[in-house]
Length: 133
Image (cartoon, rainbow, N blue to C red; front, side):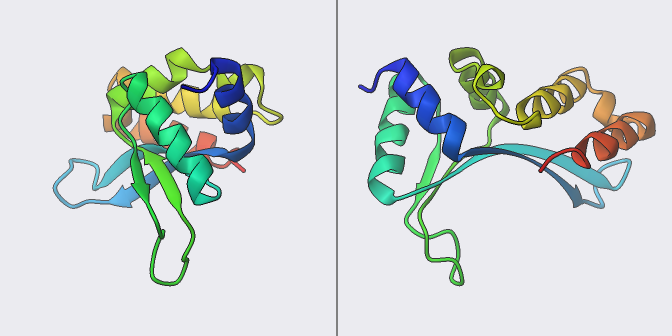
């Protein structure tokens, strides 16, 4: 198992928090907000992170190629509980060079309190999403 500080250092460089707003007719507002944490690097490093996350009960998905056009390995954490475990285990805002993790946590708080199901909450998420790099 990798040391927590090593994983934190690697994640500070290759982890990217993403907020996706997807059109979905079955939701009352017509949109769905999806959070995920994406890691792009070489396959060996991503597999080591995947094993380390499993040992910390964080489920992640490893793919050898992201898509047909982008033939690079990718590791994704997308379930809400797993994102919570990741953020509790690794304090990314303490090692991040930008404010992406702070914005990501704010969006996560909006979703956790179900404010994303209102028009005001969706507007707030769209405003915060503009700050993500």
